[in-house]
Image (cartoon, rainbow, N blue to C red; front, side):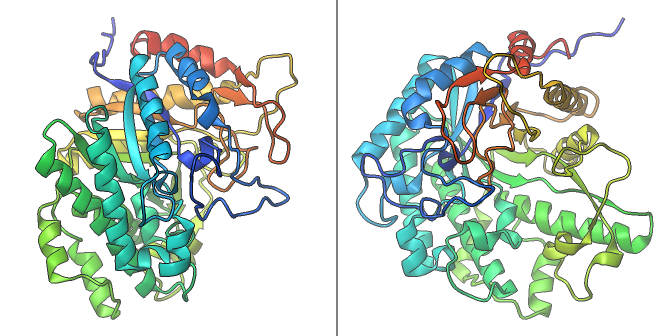
Length: 460
């Protein structure tokens, strides 16, 4: 008889979201504009003004999470809600909202996790300073972060600084860092990445110097890359992506500094990163209490498709090829639970620090007819297989894992503002261009989560 693999009672199950994708209330209670607030809707996307109106409906959403037996909710504090200009006076009404939200979580037995930045730079800092290209913005962000830590650390014991930090070492950086002008060069990319890393490390060091009961970790979008063939050039290219987009971030988070391979590449190509002697001393003090990541899919890389002379952190721009051995969703993202296990086990073996997958889920196209329950069996299968893969990493591979958080388990607009790409176990009744009534409607997966999490995932 197979012995049940029981997780500890302290294991976290929960949901992750960003403020721009949930809160709405873009111009209420003194909130300043972020770069997302001024982005218009298009034929296939929504604007960011209402999202799912969680600013006014968080009690309803927290009740749904409690009913699913979730015990953690990772949310973001919107920089421009609590500090409208980014570097000016703080907005007490904005801070009051997060007080209410966090207290409402704790009242329901839901542990809060806070993310401090999820792509939405205050518009003032983007226009005036070009976002994280500027050391002034680094200082403004650290000031904001310290203020939030000091205010909320009595109730919030788990923190991350940047959502998917390795995106700042890819071309997506120019969309998420407040970058308004420039030639999108490698110099600019490497500079912004280093500036954000200094933000993270300064705040991590601040927590470790001042709050013994608060934990902070680095977070990245895990790049599970397979070589297209066993050809050495394919294997080497996949290894370089691992080094530049996974290890590079976690090495810096844990005080090792940037890997020699990354620094040598920058030196050989005369890439400027604005690293000062003071920065080097700050980096030496870095440490992480856990290592967090998002995982949705794996990718296959062919060296034949990578342009000659391309930087390793840009290999995925053109080097990706179709995965032949796994199913994909409607957006051609590979469904690969074994890749999830690989991510957990690889990183725990490498760093020996607790691992925390804090985003996992599948985007699907779904509509509700107003009467019948949405039968999202594909989502149930996805989460079932990924949770089982995580348990394999824990019980077969020896990895230490703190919890499992799904992404957007109450429907929200995707990161590219598409409400029709749905990740939730709860349907939110709106489309890209019609807000309808925003009614929350549990899907079949809601009741699956409810049953599985009631017993701490023991049945899987």
